[in-house]
Length: 203
Image (tube, rainbow, N blue to C red; front, side, top):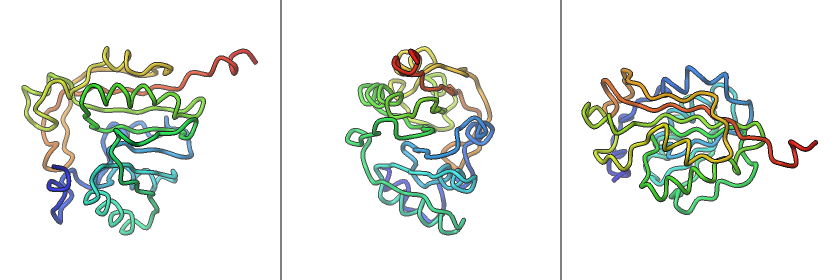
């Protein structure tokens, strides 16, 4: 599906960063950032332009090829990894920040990926997410047409153990990010920090 969607000359989600990410980039620690399901690279390239070291992982080779072209056009480097998140190891204390923008996964896989976020972040690392909620189905302006693939704030709180939520909200906002995310949208937004490990708290 994704190779097919990305097999066009234009960038179907645009080339500008997600609005929530751009508005909150100052809350991300400087260093290594992992972008989940990054597709055509708009967020990864923008983060690289801000001085972050960025790795973009996606299951679509077509999307990642476009991400590399966008990086070259902007004269920045983005490491791209062609991998399904079902088989991708996020690592341990590897990332200063992890970014998830409209990364809608089947519930069992989503729970597994989210459960690994805290371990993958360095102590004090930040997880930033924006996703559609089930209320998005009445708008029809983007996202999957299946409620199980949507997210809620309560669900994310339970799926993200080891993270301290600094910001979490469900709201409606206007989204104009390419032709597949265009119009009023119902979203959940999260910024959360990895809690110190028990041994760190004891020092």
